[in-house]
Length: 270
Image (cartoon, rainbow, N blue to C red):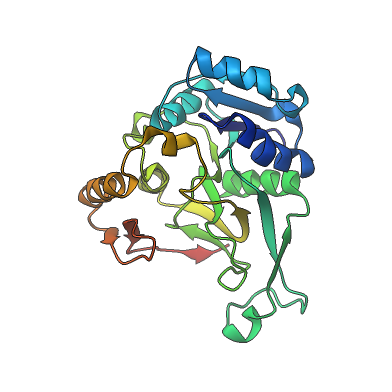
């Protein structure tokens, strides 16, 4: 239970990966021997191998091109039962919620104004605790709050149906076709729904979040030059058709990116 692995899929972000996620993990004292980087092909391997500092990771592994393909490859690369953390390659920081007043068990507006964010104090300890909770509760997927905004975050750990965002999450590996991803856009939503369908619960820590720039970092899926809003709408329609009783499509977000909303969260705090 104290052993876990870290996988980072990366595509055309040779310097960004080191500047952001790898240096973040080093600063937060994660053992570099746990960290594997998954790249698309031999050409990408050569570029990453040339440019990355060797003391920041364990090895570079040639997987598959395309996010869903790479995620599926990573899932089968590790043995079943592996405690696996996946991170995006453009994470600036991992943060946790604090309250100087010491009031931790409330979400009321009266106390939210005292919430602050700080660098996570012990990332290794948090990851181990997350997997321990999963093992003790028959949970196979855990994640964190999607946006680093102290006002909206809280100190609850919710078990049920909560969106597990893609840049930082953990799972206990299973080699099941039911967990095979079929879409690139909103693959994190699909994964959440797949795990919930199998287990009737996922775990989210609402006091932990990441600092990153969604849809803006060069490289990655941005390099494919697809209209991501169009692709997102296709994926949203696909997921809603597959899970009509627990999802709906929301088109009103300021970013203009269509979203899938979960209609039956079925949560209970841990």
